Length: 509
Image (cartoon, rainbow, N blue to C red; front, top):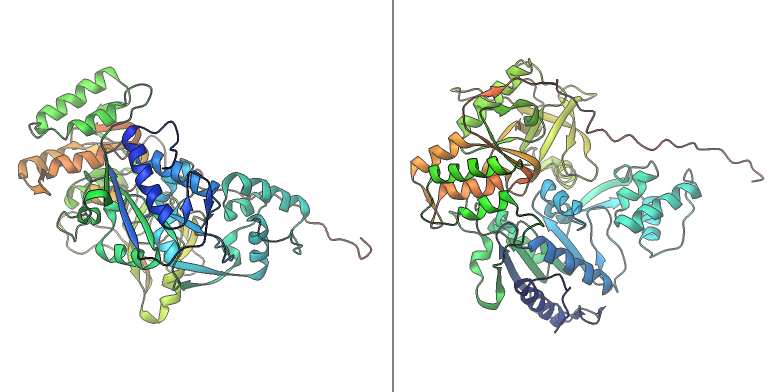
């Protein structure tokens, strides 16, 4: 039996031991810190579930730490090591935002799409990346000084990120990518967070790639819309489905988690829940009851709603408040990728964009027009290399109008909806520091009386919505929008490259 980290609770330790047993069958010992060659074996899948605050992320982080100590290489979206003798681990999430949430907590994660599509790099990049990973001698690359390499090495040792290391030296990893290819060969160990968002097709693809797969998810969230309230881990039972029961708290009780878990009471109605929110707001400033939507916050943290009609009306009000018309977008406006509309012959371009993080549901911010007509410069939220330029089809929806208005549109490319307000379904996997929840929509859901997977739909919606908040929950009670205090801006998104001075060496140097 392995020796779990001392900060793990009893149910986390039980899950740890079960996962350690599966890894041991695969030739990885967490207790002794070693990994042998993978034996020939059938694929194994294990599900670990728990509600918000149950410690899934802590357990995942501790497992990743121990597996790295056992000698496993991390398969990242930026560079894949070439050594055939090393066992590997990939930590995945369905969206850029979900992956970035893990990275901020010290877990090196990437998206499922980025692993499905692997980059082909320029040989110069590979020499640097292999050296950073400890798999090659220090390279000599024209135009890159020893000082730049030293700086990159220090950052890599801290972050395990090749793009991050290169960025510290004023270089962009994406500049070295010459193409993308769909992964054919299987990998090794896969950990998938936010697995409640997986549909059956994604699950089957992951099983083909990873002989050992561990799914982490929250059964209280919303299932994919095409699966009738069923989540992929609902098929697991017995020792293949581990549920974390204990709810861990911060040093001071977290009122947001308290409210989320109160929704598990079958007798709780909407009005009683709203009274609980008002009581929490009276004693803790992490919960706020507001009479109107904060339009400034909408630029980076969307209002969470239930109905599409509400979403469209709030977006319309947001754009009018900022003086935007239907003929153009303002730099700083948030967008949501609605898919890639590219013909089959442009498959390589699709793979490129998806691997860069531009997948359906991705959150982006409009930076301005591109160099070509119909192109947009965008910031992809949560992507390691966030700035891209892409042919765009932007749809501005109007209340009571079936067809959206297109301020500009390329013949093909990425399609976008406005992102100042989003449905709770689309918000899954994302987190923001402050979150606005539009209570009139939840009240409407409670009046509708709909059920999902044995629970009232409004409670599932409320649970997902309020657990998107990291530090502050704003409960908006009325159909009203506050005027913006500041204009839209993009300065918070731009990362300026490190200023470098390159000197030409003399022939006798």
